[in-house]
Image 1 (cartoon, rainbow, N blue to C red):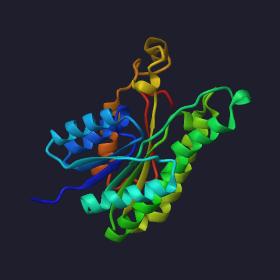
Image 2 (tube, one colour):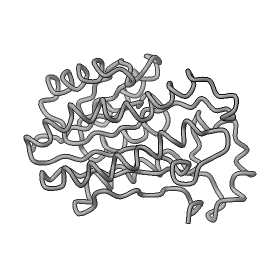
Image 3 (cartoon, one colour):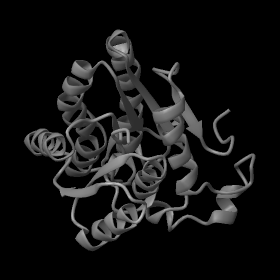
Image 4 (cartoon, rainbow, N blue to C red):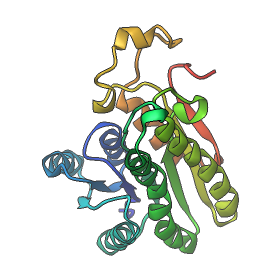
Length: 242
């Protein structure tokens, strides 16, 4: 039996991250997940992954801390033996009009949503370059493409991920390491629970909000099937950004 590929998904105790972890497990990947604090939710995700007959383990650490990220990647490599796919999914929001936005809320979002991608990818690509294969998927957002009032911090971080993705793809292509981004639209998760689905759907050509599984299937496609795609931003938004 062939050795399973290994994926690491950050922020995967619930929502989009959890759906990505499950979709990759269904495709036969062993899966490592990270979580910030909700141990119960992380354990539940691990149970669901184990039920799919793959190896799975959860790691608690702060993706906004460089040393913690480096140590976590080290532990994943020690536990799983290799790393084929990194999904930089962890993110937070601290919304508010820019005029009243605190430095703390700006820095928290930039650190968790953008700097974390550097902290995770930096140690991960070393093993991918050595094995001359790998896939990095960065979770951007439509607001990184078109902006959104009250989300200057979040939009800046998600736009930064797009530039990061394109530059890294150019650097790593010759080593057979692909780097892509996904730009989700309005997806039904805890992060969007305060939005009115019907009101939001009016602005979406497909007239509905997306599901976490819509993003997860795109992650699986980029990881498994898209061997000639790199440096791209795939919009999964029901046609909202056209």
